Structures are given as structure tokens and as C-alpha cells.
Image 1 (tube, rainbow, N blue to C red):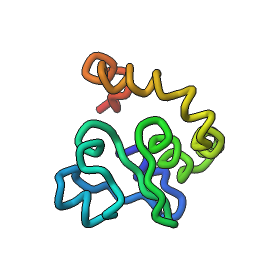
Image 2: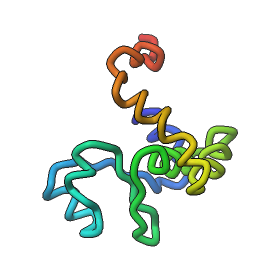
Image 3: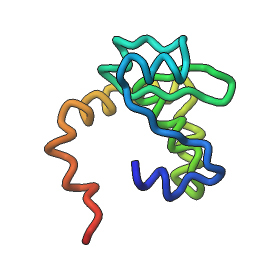
Image 4: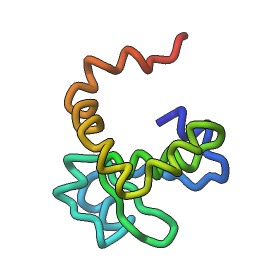
Length: 104
């Protein structure tokens, strides 16, 4: 989350809690049951994305090579290919988190 906030080119990314009231305030189109289980992103036009496609949409707002990859991966076909990896990572994020720890 901090990496995205630091690299967000135009201040497009806002993070909100995934409780029912916060989710409904962001967009009434978000399924609150899905939002409790996975990451959700809403683009500027109000379209709702879940899982790997949501991650790709968020990363696409950053610059450089990662932003470029995010723009490619947010396409539906590419995000469908990445979904199993996203689910694996989400399921085991506690064991994998040490890889993303920022040094003090």
C-alpha cells in the first residue's frame, strides 16, 4: 500500500476500509460479500474490479515499468491468467510478507 501511495502519479488511488458502510459509500455496485474476501478497485468511470484485475488497475496508476505492466495486466484476459497467482499470494500472504518488508 505504501509503495502505491508513493508512486501514484496523479493521486488517483484512494484506499478505503472494506466494511459494509465504507464499501457502499465508494460504490453501490460493489458486492460487500466479495469485498470482504478480496481486494476491490473502482476506476474513474465507476467500473468495479476484483482480485488480480483490481491489483493491476491499482498498479497501472504508478509510473515506470510496473505501471506499464499494470496497464497490460488490467485487461480481462491477462488478469484471468494472473488470478490463480493472486489467490495463492492472498492465501499465503503472511508467509510471503517478509519479501516486501521495507528495511528500517
